[in-house]
Structures are given as structure tokens and as C-alpha cells.
Image 1: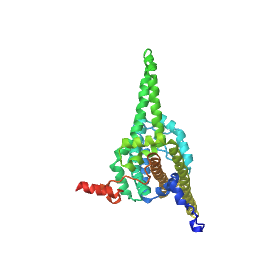
Image 2: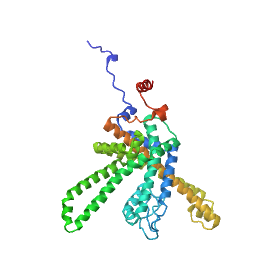
Image 3: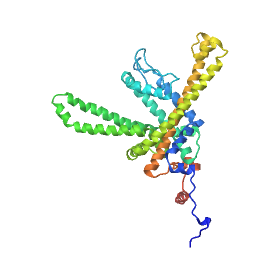
Image 4: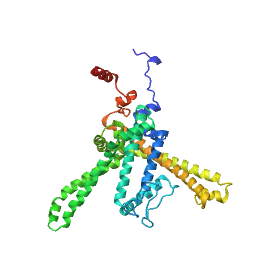
Length: 385
């Protein structure tokens, strides 16, 4: 006969908020805005954005009317009347500036000097492969293993493996570009009478090449943000990173799209707050500082003062405001790298059943934080003896 006492009754399982979040993967992406705010990462991101800004502001040596597109919110270096791209003001929101830049990108590519654009692209990839890799490694260690590494350590990691990060991004782009050039060359056969028959016979091959290019570009669109985190987390080479990312894109597209959507929405909210905070801070500062400073002070604050000391003061004020904008974009850069790292870890768990907390550590270099099982360590010691 069953015991009717209350102590024998089954107790319902205790459901906690932490338990619910542990079962779900996408809520982990909500940590990305906080991870991106860490001081060491913000410093590295500030350096990266500043370097990109400097690279984008260098006129091309191949033509005075070359156009270099730096990205959302950046100015466009062009000769007078050479481009109709709207220069986005520092007061524009991230969505508006990104949309304006996107609309002007085809015209910029058409009008730009190709060599200058390629040069800036290479510089941008190098920055991503070094500083971006350091940010991804730092975020992965803290998010997955709870290990804090300093900014110099993160930067040293990126510099020591820059070739892997650069190749991980450049190889897919190079393959797609080579496919496009190959299609263009083979397409010349269609313009030559007689040879156009051969071109028509080869057309199915051209379609196959085109389909492969579409797959590569689609994988880059969906998984490009995971290429640097892939080799930063696994400490692997470029080929392995590309294989991992493309495999995840092709086998877990729905999960990836969901994680990317959460990351984009979270990032949009975080960046809106960042732009609002920076803009409100500058606006309040100008309003308070201009109350008793008169017309001269207003001109200095507005950056329109002329003549000697007044112009110098206006330049300093404008520079400080520019630094504030760079800080906001540094936060965006840091967030993109942190969110991309978390997305990679979550998709890896969905596809490979490898927990997101598993980060590769080189025991020789980071023995104090290496996540090795005790039996593995004992086996290594026994083998060494």
C-alpha cells in the first residue's frame, strides 16, 4: 500500500531562469554587448577602426579622382564632382548610414580605381586577421572558458597567426573572383564566329562554375563572420577554418540564420544606445559649454571658427568629437567580433555536439589555463618518462 504521507509525494522539478537559458543556445548571444565593452577589447577595436580610417583616407596613387569606400559612416575620398555618394554626417544613425553606404557602393566600385580598392581590401583583411583575431580569441576565452587574457596577449595571438586569418578570408574570395574571371574569359568564345559553337558547348560547364560561385558567396554571406572566430577558437589553419564554417552553413542553415538574426537585433539595440549615448553626450556638452561663451564659443564648438587660435581650438574640439565617433564604431567592431565568436561556438555545438565552452588551448604556451583532462595529463607525463 503506497504511503499517503506528503513526504512520499513526488516533488515537481524546480525550474530556474538559469536552467531555461542553459537549455537554449540563442540567449547566450545576449552576452555579446557586454563582452564587447571590456576595456582591453575596446582599445584593440579603437586601433582597428582608426587604422581602417587612415587607410580609407589615403588617396590612390593611381589617380586623383579615385574613390575609396571605407564603410558605414566614413567619408568618401574623391575628386570634386567625381561621386554622388552622400557623405553621411556624424549625427546619422547606424541604420541610416549603413543604408546610404550600401546604396552608394555600386557607384563607388564603378568610379573607383580598382587597384586602390583592392589595396584597401587587403589592408582591411590584414586588420581583421590580426586585431580581429585577437578580439575573437579574447572573447572566446572569456565566454567559453572563463579565462581573461589581456589586450597585449590577444594582439600577440593575432599577430602570430595573421597568415591563417588572412588566408581564411582571402581564399574563398579569391576562388570566387577566379571563377568570375574564368567565366568572363570563356565568355569571349561566344563573341567569335565559329568559336561561339565551342562556347555554347561549354556553356553547361559555365553554369556549373556559376553555381559553385553562388554557393561560395552564399557561404561567405552567412558564415563570413565566423571565419576569423573559427581559427581563433580552434587555433587551426585557414583550410580547416573554411571547411568548418562552410560545413556549418550548409548543414545548419536554419540554426545559423536564427543565431544571426538574434545577433543583428541585439547589435542594433546596442548600437542605437551607443549612438544615442555618444550623440547626447556631445549635444549636452555643447549646450552647456555654449551658454556663456558667446558667438566665439559657439563657433569653436561648431568647428566654424576662423583665424589663428580660434581655428586651432575649433580643430581640437572637432577632433575630440571625431574620437567620440570612432569610439562608437570601435564598439561596433568589438561587438561584431564577439557576436561572431559566440555564433560560431553555438553553431558548432548544434552541428558537432561539441559544447560551446570547449576552447582549444596550447598547453605549452597557456598551461595554466589549458583545459586538459587529468588522465590526459597523466598519460602525457607517463609517455614523457
